[in-house]
Image 1 (cartoon, rainbow, N blue to C red):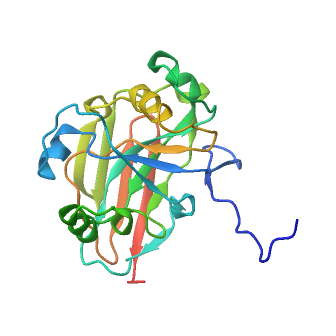
Image 2: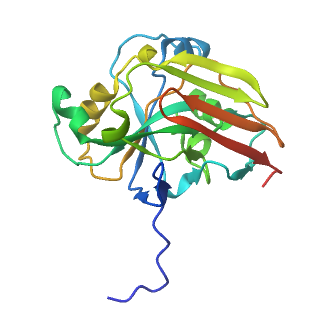
Length: 231
């Protein structure tokens, strides 16, 4: 078989402490998975079944890179998130077996064109233009489970230019990582390289050109992103 043009390089994210990288297959994101964030977005933080949206795999950006202020927005937001990396695929995964499918965890930033997202929500349209744009998924080095275990509590904290904007605990997740994995796997077969961004706490807000956004999660280290001139 001959491709009519060269296939793109496969997207990947770094592995902490070595030169290896994890190939990225898909990026699933959980919407409104912290009660306080649901409230700040004008929604009821109940335990209705979680909902998901996706980002393209080539939206990934390593920590330390500059992300240009994106086109078509005047309200560009940060969202600190815990990222679970699937290492063993499966379908209809029981909740009590779900963590065995996780290869590792990382710190993530779900960059969002908030004005486009909210307009789409008001019109009952998909969120793609607000969420699934180029370089919208900053993912830090993945820490393997055999090194750090499964973080279920601990701080998740975001600062912009040294000023803390988000400060919460992973224990505040409405839907836990094993619950999320089990629910997803009953609709879609998970495979190695799938990333799950598990949701963001309250305190989301805007970024502007020149800002430096830093996110720390207890036990996973920190990532940093500089916002460059408008793209």
